[in-house]
Figure 1: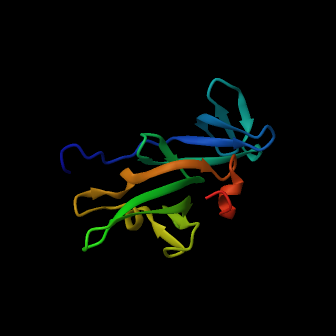
Figure 2: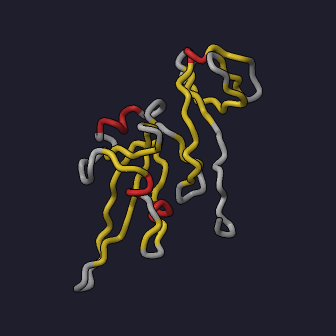
Figure 3: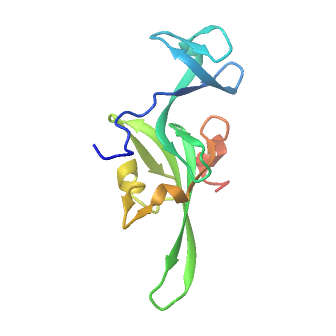
Length: 147
C-alpha cells in the first residue's frame, strides 16, 4: 500500500431523530438500539441512521449519506472564456457503495463517488464540492426549487 494511504476508513454515524426533528451524533450503534453522544440508549426505529462516506467537502466537513452537495467547476473554453457551472447531488448508500443522485438532470441518475468525484488529471474533483444541507433538515433541496 502506498505511503499516506489509509486502508480502512473511519466508521462514523449520525442519526436524524424523527420525533424531535434534530440531527444527532451517534456514539454506539446496535442492532435495534443506538446511543446518542452524551445521551441515553434509544430505540433505533425512532431514528434514520446515516453513515460517514470517509470523505470531506471543500470546507473540511464530513460527508454523510443523505447530504446534498453543490459541485462548482470552472469550464475553460479553448478560445479563452471561463464559465462557472454548478451541479447538485444527493449522497446515497446503495448496492454496497456510496453513490450520488443528480438533482439537476445534467448527469446520469446514479454515479459512484469514484465516477463523479475521482482524482483524475491531478485534480481532486471533490475539493470543489460543498455540503449545502441534508435531506432531513432541508427537504426542499430535493425539489430543486432552492437550488
